[in-house]
Image (cartoon, rainbow, N blue to C red):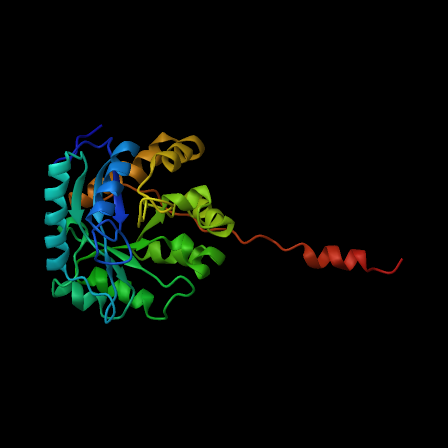
Length: 276
């Protein structure tokens, strides 16, 4: 296996999505919580974490410079505590029409300063301007990664929406806990459907705290390896993440559309109520 050129070894897990910076959003409330989350990650086998605090235009704006400063502060504490986890800057950007311009101006922190940017949709709907925003992001030289699409109600109900996004150049990151049913059966089913149809490029923790949404990937990774094969697990949890850190192209399979299931309810009902 090819060794990563700049950041670490390929077989060490990387978490591309976390809210681990202290006191900056709805994630770690203080430095103590951040350090405890890092220790949990270290015990779980995670060696690289990208800090992705929320960036919501007009509400919770964490500009690139602030994220970089917070990361440096956390790194100092990591060294002091001798925690064997590397931290990288990033952000999770809420879908708004202004994203392409904000990226171009350097106000949004991309993933480790690469061309990759993590973008979040609303949970209940897809804005009518989403496809246009993704197009303009790419036009400006950036690579959009859609965060936890399995948690979006429209995509969960119609996975081919994500298929169309991917065909236009959007990548997708699912929350590893979705595969375990943490967010409920509907989200779990959506996550596995997307994965089985080649619509997932990364799995991450989206960690927010020490309990519940903690930075753990080992169990979901084992489950993916068991059901989808070790090669798929490596791509989702390690190799593609390292490609992002090094601003390299990722390796991924061509997605396939989800065939709509035929409904048998009407024929069955007609038979039940048919006069004899």
